[in-house]
Length: 168
Image (tube, rainbow, N blue to C red; front, side, top):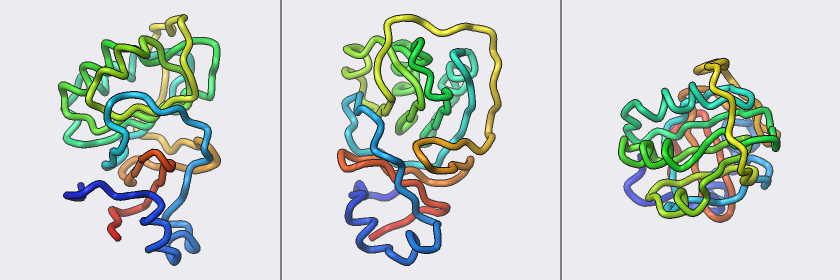
């Protein structure tokens, strides 16, 4: 990870060639900002689930080592697939952030955690616990294909995904 936080606008301005060749992509601005860490970045781990949070919890129980968990929850607005307890665990295990194409709950608790979280919104109903999903699969979120091992950069201007670690 970079020593100083990377501003997404500066990264775009400094790397037009990476934007043109598709190595640097911006996610559509559909995410709400949660958690105390407004700016975060790290290598991506991908997960695809639908209205089920068992695999999310399993990932966040692992050491994060500054990684960012990107969860394609199918854009479901019918329940929350991430809550306060797993986010607290992610913070304690060294995850840099979590991006959820779906809903979260326990917003006040999440906003107290020193981690970055992006989600479509909040919902009070909890998810299923069947353990269905795909780990490390490429996902399509907010108009962008995201693969395991790519890099994510998030700040208040938006979210960027890059094939490799970038700097300005």
